[in-house]
Amino acid sequence: MAYFTFIFIGIYVIIGIYHLFKLYSLVQIFKSDKRKLSPHDYQPNIGISLIIPFRNEEENLPRLIESLRKLDYPKNLLEVIFIDDHSTDKGTEIIQSSGFQLLKSVEHNQGKKAAQYTGILATKHELIVCTDADCIFPSDWLKELSYVYQKENPDFMAGKIEFLETPTCLEKFQMVDNSVTMMMTGSGIISKKFYVANGANMAFKKSVYLEICNSLETNFASGDDVFLVNSIANLPNSHIVFLHTPNFTIKTKSINSFKSFFKQRKRWASKAMASNSSSLTFFQSMAVLSSLMLMSALFVNVGAAILVFVLFILRSMMEFFMLKKYKIIDSINTSTYLCLIFWYQFYILFMAYHAIFPTKYDWKSRKTR
Image 1 (cartoon, rainbow, N blue to C red):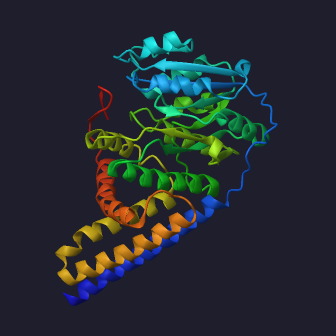
Image 2: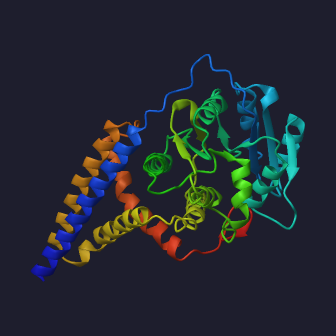
């Protein structure tokens, strides 16, 4: 029994060291990107088509429209298209009264992917930008994007997401999760090791999209962003960039109820297997194994459980100071982080289960998978 305990703790220590080393490597890659802000005197001359699919967003649309009106971008170069994904609230009336272009998603093709496809086909510009209806933007958001596009001519651009409010424990949990996710997203793209993105802040060439759209995965309701960026990454000589400058960081609402949170995460978990990167899969597998060992340590013996828990606290402290030093997370204190990261272990197992065994869920009054 003592030999088994020794082996168990040894494996946990090795996984912890690997996890810290990998996290440190990802942070270093993320912070190595020195892309500069667009000059103050930059005058864009790139046409942009902004695509916004929505479903039952009556509560969020007024704030979104106000943010759109504050964008500092030439009106003659900007096309904004809303696509209604079969809303059952008053969202369509709000858009109609705003003066922005409104399209209806095809009746027999329900879902965000179909709505997005409808919008893209209707665009007149080569540069397509996608966002969600619950977001707001910096005034220079599109100007920053246009500058990078004109300078580097990328096929796909992924951007950073932040949350609007963080007063509750659930919202703080989401903030920590999102901060680490954004860091990993940027690290993967910058290092060209793996590719993930967030559909609330991404841009791509229409010609490239049309080249690969027929091969995109359509069996999942979620994952339009991940499937798209991976398909583009597989094209010969494709160029993908990640922008995390303040001007290209948009804000969105966090989920304020546990029920909605778990529904959203089940939806996200369904696309977790989309990446074909062995590096990312191995890193995720080690995180799952680490969480399993932490949860199962008590079944080995009390001494092993105490030692594993102490090692977990030490590793978490090192992670926290690393993320704090490089400003990946800013507004979370040590005690709050340690509390959140403990519950995060259960969250990792929840996500892993639903990634491997996806189930049906209800999202915006629609049952899907």
